Amino acid sequence: ATDWQRGRVKWYNGKTEVIDWVSDVSFWYSTGTRPLLLRWVLVRDPSGVHEPVAFFSTDIHQAPRSIIASFVKRWAIEVTFEVGRAHLGIETQRQWSDNAIERTTPALFGIFSIVVLMVYALFGKQPLPLPQAAWYPKSHATFHDIIAILRCHLWQHLLFQTPADSTNVWKCKPPKLRHLLSSAIY
Image (cartoon, rainbow, N blue to C red; front, top):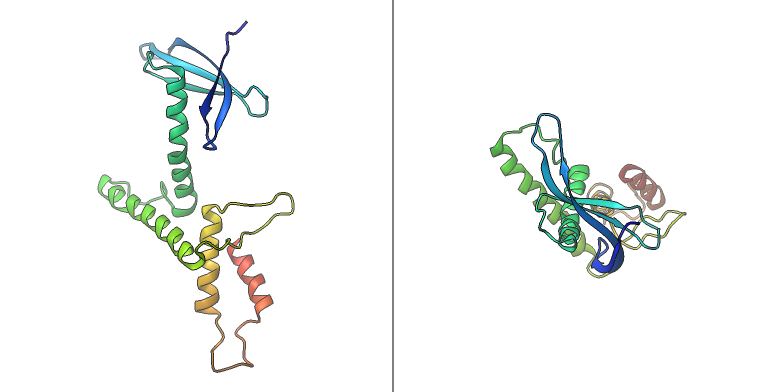
């Protein structure tokens, strides 16, 4: 029988969760390379809701809880890079020289921050107009939602605003405009 340890750890959602884990040291071997000692940690959800996950460390003296904590801390960074790849074009740059990457990657993350700050400046503490799906309620905005909200605001106010001196002329009537913007943005 496997000797599972049970404990509370900070998990991906920022909350403290109860998990089970087992750990040991093994060799990692690949053809043409010397075997490498590594510590592995297998984590499972005692309630059985989430799939088991494995973590590895080449520091065989690192405690299993420490390995788990290291990977959980990296999650926010991984999510940031995933969003950067999906919405800002990180890793799709044409120039792959070190200098180009050192210039463009920080600029892209700067743009990410500016977009978030612009939407915050527009809405402050008001709830954001999030798109809702019939199958689940959405309570938090993703970067996709935030950039769509900013696009909608800019397009609505810069491209489709009706002149103030003309009350009978519409560039595009509001219901039609909302439909067009929604189709273009989402």
